[in-house]
Length: 269
Image (tube, rainbow, N blue to C red; front, top):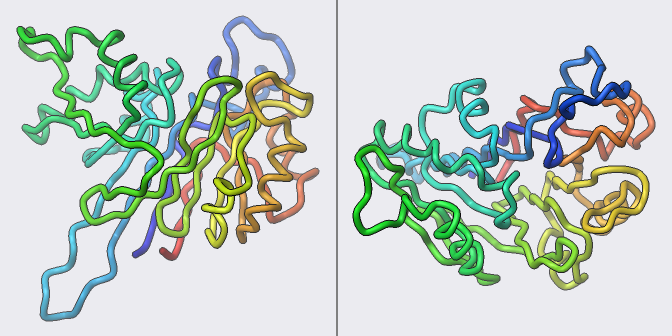
């Protein structure tokens, strides 16, 4: 398969710039320092079986739907979405789910959302009107699919969940073919991290250089990336507490670079 990844957002929970902040990162004129909440769009195009057979259907999968979901869909002209994968239930990763109603109107079908049972419980509480027996007209239609640490398929696309810890909270990263994505992690067991071995592109989060209570510090993210050994690693979920994009990119080795909103990658599956 062939994979196209677009970074729809690369910022931490407050986004960059942060409301009211006058720091040099928040005041930077560089578009690469304008970071919406972290999310990626993964488009999978299966390899054709033969010229005599109709090509397999592609899949368009979103990882996380935070509060900037609507803006991201409009900015990057996303007209089709086949499924949403959720890493965990924090607001900066699920707060945009109300806007899936637009895709419901376009497709005439519920939006498949893949999440752990605990995350689903949080969604049912947060979006009680979505799951009510008597729903008002126009409410989003969401079809929940329960996942855990076992591999599963979205359509014909295999997905490998990877367990990590966001402080005390269990979360999931995902491997899709030769692409690996791990955000909001603070700790991860080596046997889980080993599931990312062999990916071409690896994405890992960090919020700052200094130690953080629930996220990798920059040095920890770099150590994780070195263990995974991908050809190229990108940093996401960056806060205003780390230097501006151009400075960080110049300091880092070429095989690990900060992602930025709108960055698009083409990865062999």
